Image (cartoon, rainbow, N blue to C red):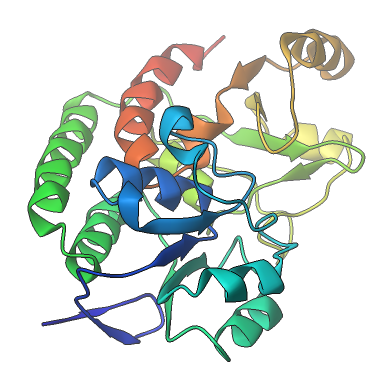
Length: 262
């Protein structure tokens, strides 16, 4: 049987795969599916589960990949993501790695297909199906809760320069599960912005993410005084990591409902 990745490439099942993961959230998913023994390489940002991945060799970051290290590990499969990994790097990997598995979840519901893809290719289908059942139950429970007031949310991922997310990102899709929307600020998926009166007029709530920029409660207090809008700190892993963490992420979304109308 074959399994199709995000760009339509087909992959045969391989129970003896040697896997390098360049996607932190998928590294965690592979471990949860019992595939840690087949992981031969990971990025320095692949930090969960800590007690498992500490023994897996690091091959650089998600963008600054050490190709020589990967070559020496002789993987049969490298897992990449359209948003997180750069295409020129992926093209170079394809010159010596037999299988490049491309992923691109764009909304919470895509996590089921992601788990099935990983479980199928690497022969952990039973564990993947069990995970999918638990995830789909959590998502259904969230959707069964009546939505609160609609909110226009500016979700900040960086400062100096300030950056946010567009409507076609996974984070925006997570917010949409609460009936919340993000402002349209141009064509970029992660646009830069300035704190102008025109922008603030489009915003009900500001969220500062704990990653990739490490915003803290101190940032929240300072910014709220500056802009006069309700501002809160949110867990970036829960909002942006698909795979294993998405199950907890869906639960976490329910806790954010109380921010509406602050």
